[in-house]
Image (cartoon, rainbow, N blue to C red; front, side):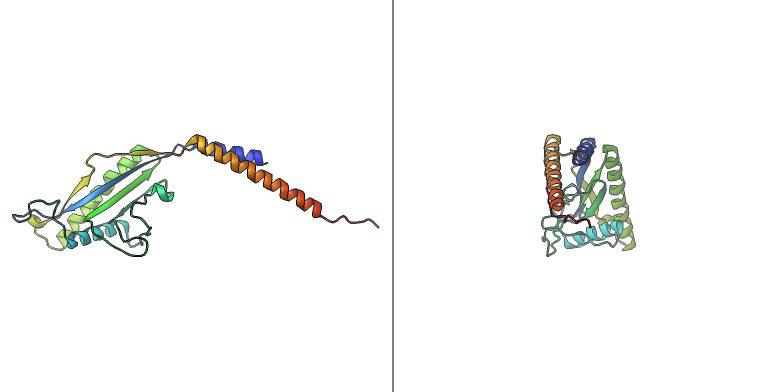
Length: 198
C-alpha cells in the first residue's frame, strides 16, 4: 500500500508542469509643470493615496494579508492561479508604510497566454478607474495623474520545482512513512491480548 501511495505521489509530481508568473509596477505620475517638469521624480502623498484608492476600487474591500517582507510573491505563498494589486507596504508584518506611488501587479497562471491576457485587462482597469476617479473629483485634464508601467515589455517567468529533488524527497518520505506504519502495526499486534477459550 505504501509503495502504491508513493508511486501516485511521484506521478502527480511528474505531471506538474509548473506555472507562469509576472510582476509589473504601475507607476502613478504627477502632472508636469514648469517647476516640476520631471514627472518621475515628483513624489506626493496625495498620489500615493490615489494609487491606494484605485487599487481598492478594483480589488474590493477585502483586507490585504501582510507579510514580514514586501518582497513576498504570489508564487512564494503557494498561489498557482490568481493575481494581486496593491501599493507596496514596507512597514513589515506589524506596521504600515506606504511611500511609493506605484501599484505592484502580480499575476500567476498555468500558461503564458492567461498571464498576458490578465495583465492587459488589469492595466486597462487601473487606467479606467484612475480616469473615472479624477473626473468624479472634477480634476482639470491639465492636472491629471497619468500612468506608466515598468518594465515596459512584459517579462514572464516559468516557475517549476526540481524534478530530481522532488523524486528524491517523495521516495524518502514514502519509505519513511511506510516503515513507520509497519513498525506501529507490529507493536499493536504484539500488545493484543490472547483470549483463552473455555
